Length: 333
Image (tube, rainbow, N blue to C red; front, side, top):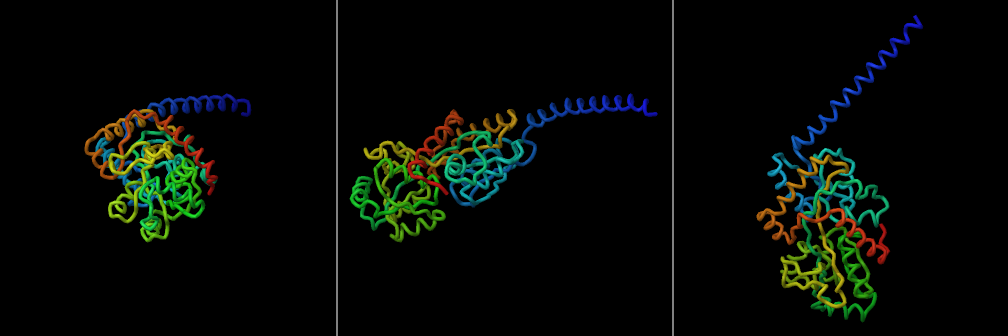
């Protein structure tokens, strides 16, 4: 009995191995077929901020367009907290099937890991689908400060080193880095005051409890138009099409190298199947060329990205830029 059992065991092992081989052979085409049929169910776009902000707006604009072009509902999931990193981490951990995507900004995608040790993901944990658009930030002054332009600002701060402060929406945000770039380029000594969001920053600027601040253009524009704060210049290398009357800071010799924007990108988890990534890129590229989408973006103060942006190079260049600013300002959270 003992002798006869060995051939039986060998036969069972052979049958099991053949069965597993057959399962593997059938599974690979099935997965490929699922990817080629994508999407077959609703897609979730995660936004790492509460409703109402600029990243949320980008997510909703892009989500509506993708839904139309891909033929499936697109649901926005607002997962605010930790400067967008909680939402980004969820997408980094998601299954790479194209049903969980991220509309993210430079804060959580390129800056957070440079300034916060608790951030566990990196750009390698994402599949870049494409850049959506960007908008500059704007350096503003309170009406009490007495300055009217960037030259007045430079002269006042240089004459009184350490006396004045500027505010941003938080440590390590794009607004904070823009302020530090201005300081570095202009050779200025100012104190950074981080606020817990744009609302308290606005209150202190409008209430003349703070001399200077940095806004995303779309957030600052209503207060600029109402005369509650003074626009000193935008932070992109050229003037924004949305505000051609506001000079770019780079037009002033002391700030000629200032060039930093708040940008937004569509990302998926790492290792998205090629057919899925290709369909998403095609749908996004069609969206970027849509006149209706471009008009909505302009109304929000944002420019639309070129479909030809090399995302790998773009992201690496942005990280290199932010690394220099973080090192200069010794930013750490």
